[in-house]
Image (cartoon, rainbow, N blue to C red):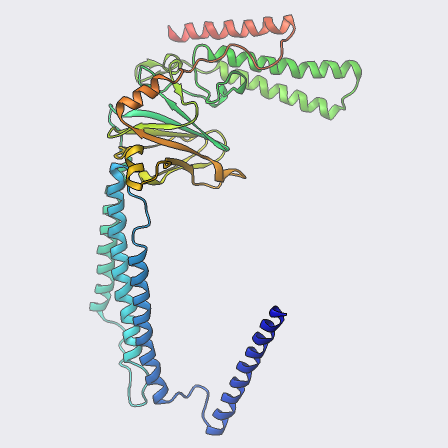
Length: 421
């Protein structure tokens, strides 16, 4: 009943407005005036209301600016302070332009309202005005661009040699965090080396991981060939299904060749295979950072484009498949200190995905723990180093298949020796 009354009131209101419009039209016809004819009193009233609205509009804008001026959390990185200052400078410039331009708009609209005895001055060109509205915006924009580029270059420049190297890899819908071992060098990776069967989820290249990866590929090839042999004996599969399996075998053989083609290359004077053996993959996935120490964050993606976002550190970087990206920063506030500042014992910094990447995008986050160097080193000491499993994921194969795997492993070992020589 209540909804019906509300609907009736709305309908009656619309009808009343329509009738008032008709009354206005009739009164205008009785006055014998045109629709575009507006009286001096109406024009003056509109000018007054224009100024009144300017006061209300500017007052409301100032209120919102003051009330919501500090929406970002306190910066917890060294470059975050510089970035916040850059944003403040830009906001102040935009605010000044906003009030000046809109103030002139309101003022001129109110001051020069239409009067029958007033004539506008017409001039087609004025060099002084052209110079003013060309040079002034150019100078302001040049300042914004130069200031912004200087801040950006400072944040994204090369990290120092002493910086701690950390790699963050994205995958729907999780993060992997990898630290270098005692050699302080992150081992080389290759997408063809990614092997869930041996727990080499990041494709790290080591002397153990290459033979282990070849084993799993050989096992997969053997399994697909067994399907074809069984189908041929029993005549169960149609020709199209057999072709699909043969195509899969062809792709697996190409994958195996790409693995065999991986060459021994140098990473800052350390063998790539040796560098990866002592790498540390954080488990559980957490990003631990020492306070007051420069950190170089390197980003990779295993599938689609993600975006690593650390709001408290004013840092964000896309993770792009096949295109490594990087960022550097110096954390300035530990997790414990920020908990005290916020009076929230459950607070944690977060690494979030800020690029919509699928159905579970909302849940793609891990904690970031900023701690003292002693705490960081103690935690790092508890993490196991990466060792590729030698056990293939597939089921045990026939004797001929095992022999093939051994030959492949021997070929890889021979290639390693040749490349090292």
